Image (cartoon, rainbow, N blue to C red):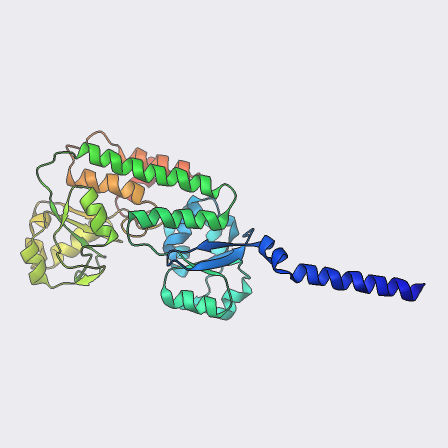
Length: 342
């Protein structure tokens, strides 16, 4: 009798093992997403542990209320003061990097269900480690919306609803700017420096920076294409922009840097006091940022103050943080963000 029971149990266990190993059961516990590169990636049906190796996308995860799922982030995000103010818990999240290189063993220790990245080399490294890896990189506003939607699809739960709300807000703010600037006769020329530490690096055309300059009613004074284009002081003098915006910099630091340079201090924008540090929040607003929804309003107001009169950027910033991050900024904090103080 005992022998028969053992045989029956053995047969049942063998059948169960075969069932669990079957493609149908595997398919029910996983799903596929198509990343920004067009690659189909199989991920768990329920993602509970997320490694986000792209600085900018950590902000999107925060926006989508998914920060509790983060098990890996980047060193830069852990040092981003407004991010740590809004989400102090990010300080405790592992950053599996040595410089710009992923430390695969450290990443594997975090046991992520999914990895999000943007750098092709990092995507390749994570995939070679057999981790489901999604490329979330984008280069324009349409891509920003698709990347937010992709991240929401990975997170699941109420994230897709939050993504739709964010995308609608971005579209709404762009439409508001378009209405206010309809029929403008003048489009100020703009130079956007990457930062104040290196005044030879600017953002050219066919970039997301170029796109928001156009939306805001300006024109890029740099005719070359691409991000972080190297230019000479002579080229900048020839371009002689009406407005200068400096990324990753406060208003004061931007103006000091330009006034120190004997050639650049002669530019029209410097002489007329139209030099601005780009706002920095949980991530700099000017590139690959969910806070581009605020950037378009801010930039339009700097380029066309008369047409954008009545839009209170302090209140806009406070409302965005309350709505999207559930964080109540003080008036002073919002002013600091708008002044590029990080």
